[in-house]
Length: 83
Image (cartoon, rainbow, N blue to C red):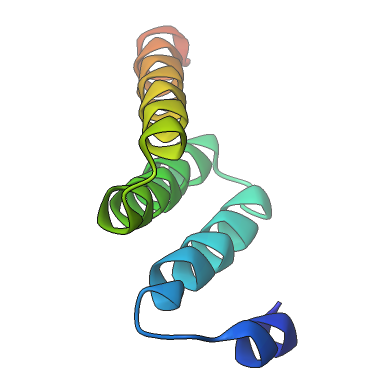
């Protein structure tokens, strides 16, 4: 991922997408479900910021939808997890 980002780097904006990918990759390897979900929210927020800055309405709408789904899943997880 780092090699591909280095080759395709075209400005500071690309770092949002790169860090979102890094955070998401780290999140999927977590054993703790809560950490996984929180990092998923962070990664989605980074992708949403990127979409807004570049002006992609469709991408921003899809990332916003994904953000609502991830937040909803996190809330549901917190309500149903064993104490």
